[in-house]
Image (cartoon, rainbow, N blue to C red):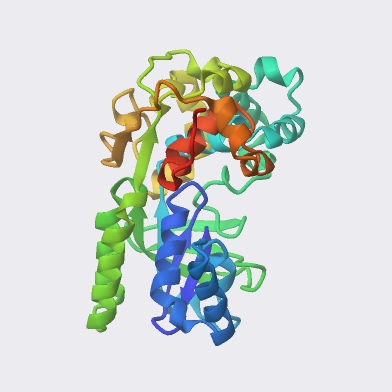
Length: 343
């Protein structure tokens, strides 16, 4: 977990990669940008004027100052079911992003990567080496704060965390962090409303601004399912085979009895601390139980992914260099940007 801190309102919102982290950062920049130094505000406004995102560096912009006292602050976090989060991270970091393919294979010691680099194979390696061996924050448990979990005791809420935050806090119970509120990605809008109501309960105008932003950002709390194709063996398909499909299978197809068992072992603390189910069937893993927004996007029949990459050379420079990555980019960005996809 990485903290976004507002000393003015004395609270912190922790976020995790692959757990609505873009929503958390967008929200914080929009709500608390006026608390930043003037020069920083001018720089962010210049990004907005140029139609560029202003939130990517929020983790640095709202890092806790040296004097910030977490033990005396209201602290919340956004989390996601660890099983679906791992599937999402696997697809984004290992399948769609070919440039990282060999790096992960090297870290895991996987030989003949194209043939065996499947979802199940990655999990089997993680079961032996630990998920930390991936050396990527997208796969770290959400119960890890700044890379190191000290000790954990649970009431229901708050949770007490004893940790070493960015190397500053001593490794003693006196450095405890009370996590008062948990926002689940699967019910993010409702949970964020509750958080904003509490944090700004004595600040009417700010509360209204925050609630309006939560509604506006709701559009980002969407899981795009690219295909309705039934692929019961998706967990054992190589990364290259998945790329050749173009559209990714639903997450449910990756969650076999074996992969769920390994995921439960790897993320037992997340399951226990954040109140998630230890087993997801094909229905619940497609987010019905978790109540997440779920939309299906149809890719046009005449979508030409090779033309799409040729006509938009900036994509290859950013690692979009295969059929699946091209389709994913069009679904998430290209159609909104009006990019052409056929001759």
